[in-house]
Image (cartoon, rainbow, N blue to C red; front, side, top):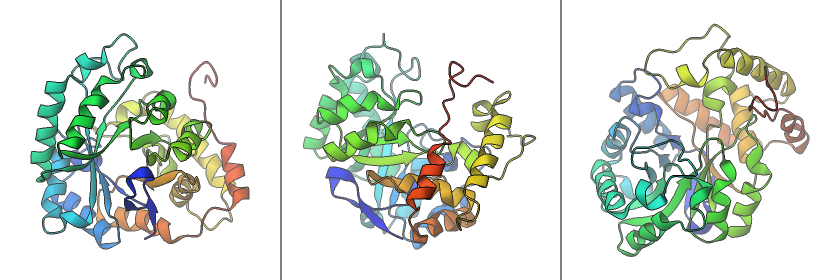
Amino acid sequence: MNFRKLGRTHLKVSEIGFGGWAIGGGWGPQSDADSAAALNRALDLGVNFIDTAAGYGDGRSERIIAGVLKGRRESVVVATKTPPTPGPWPPSPYCVACERYPERYLRENIEQRLRNLGTDRIDILQLHTWTRAWNRNPEPFAVLRKLKEEGKVRFVGVSTPEHDQNSAIGLMRDGWVDVVQVIYNIFEQEPAAELLPAAAETDVGIIVRVVFDEGSLTGKWTGDTSFPEGDFRRSYFEGDRLGRAVARAARVGEAIRGSGYTLPQAAIRFALAHPAVGTVIPGMRNPSQAEANCAASDLPAMAEDLQRRLRAHNWLRGFWYAGK
């Protein structure tokens, strides 16, 4: 396992982290025993960065992580997330920051995160979504600064809203965040235009999520793949989206032929090829997935010519650009 500096935090984190959404149950049935086994195997293979959230099974993911980390908490960096109060997700331009993330709520929610994780200080606390409408007066981050001073939180960040990755750039340039969690993969390359260069300029750590495009870039699916009730992917790939994603993933597979990478390995190595990226956090539901994902760290860096070929697979998904 290779390690990288996570921006200004100066934390040395494994370039393959553990994404904790699926172990909370959001991707269909998942046993706690399988989750613990996956996490233990990842830790054995050198993973020292775990990302979770309040919303991953209403704290279930956090509690599983806390149980596994008993006795080795100090050697692992855990990032979690606080969601806004009920309302539009992502927040609309008309939402008010101090109403969606009021101070009393933030304090109470973070106390719950501490209890679930069995710790007295959160390594990285991220706001789980955002809107650029709040960048001019980001009051919630003023509260988080106080919590840093009080010792409740070590570093703070934000997870970008799905359809506006660049909304966090103002926060980065104004010094409000230590880390940003962003969607960046072979299909979603918009962050490479401005956000990732801004992260390098401001020394903000980058956590990459959705490196497999919620699974389509693993190459395991067909147009007939189905997902169980309660599985997030059931709505994400609703209608003709699954078929379109599978077809595009097949074209990516053709582009990497002869590279020595499998499709999921290429997806991971593509994200890691950008120097601003600190860690990628694929989900791991069992030990075999942990082994496959962690092995990508030991592969050669992606050659520049292959990176160029994969840049052509950037997918502008809005109907205005791509349509059917």
